[in-house]
Image (cartoon, rainbow, N blue to C red; front, side):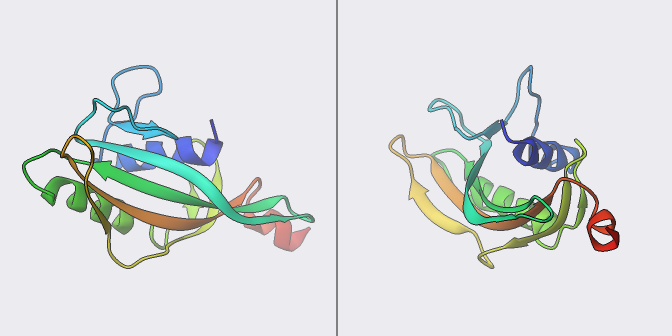
Length: 142
């Protein structure tokens, strides 16, 4: 499991968007979304640019996917909007110690994915991250 994904899950949980627990009940999942879940978020890491060799900084992208229920698209849209408010412009240290000097949304509004095969509404948003193994000050001063 990628450290930055777990750190993002911890951050979203700390902000009250959804519950993250690596060992117990959770409504945030990393790199998968169980078929039977409703009212859940998934964080998927993908692509991005390569590392800076002199710093080991990497530039992954993350998709936040929210699945609601069959009644209304409102829940999934609101969760993705809440995640966007937390993540867009974030710069700092995640709760697990991973340094993120920059995170920004690649879209300005949630992507409406429509209902899944079971009729549950889904929305997503994508983010570009800069992930640094050490604080930025150590790179710029070193």
